[in-house]
Image 1 (spheres, one colour):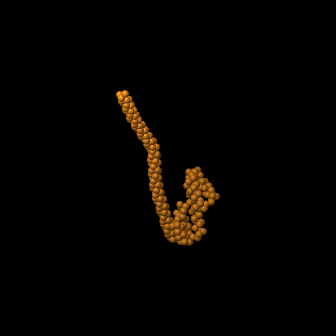
Image 2 (tube, rainbow, N blue to C red; image 1 turned 45 degrees about the vertical axis):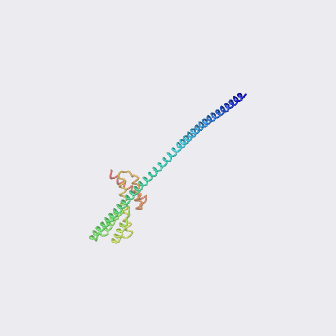
Image 3 (cartoon, rainbow, N blue to C red; image 1 turned 90 degrees about the vertical axis):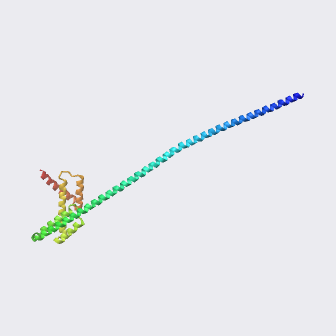
Length: 241
């Protein structure tokens, strides 16, 4: 009986040991499985993080490229604007120098004409002084020649006007005599202009503009222009016949 109890006790002890071993094995397996699952979760998390970073990088690069492109376009635009400003500045300076040179030449030409007119007036006045009997005729001739010099560019400068005033005083011409001689000279200048533009039988737009400017400057009416033009054309046809 005692042996039976001893065997039963040993069986129970063995059963407890077996259960304990099973629990220990199960616990180890659970730990390993948990560790494996944790490793998989960590691997998956890392993969997701890498994918997220890759996606962010993919989105960031086009934005950076777009920003760089905009910066480059802005730089080019500013450079083009700078070059354009420099070109306009240079062109404006060239135009200023050109205008200054043309003004200087015009002043020089006017000065030369005034000197020529003054010299001609002095020489012809001296010639009149030598021939008192022909004073009136010579005075008119002198004055007409000075008028031609003064009006040959269809403009009367201040110096030329002063010379004419001095001659009128010297020759004793009235304002009416001055206007009469001036009109004769202007008609003569206008006739020569018509003759020049009709030499080839055709009047260009530039010729028409020139004649119109002369008509305005000399106060020549349209009727007077037609009469003078008809006269010149008739004379040219006679010369060609």
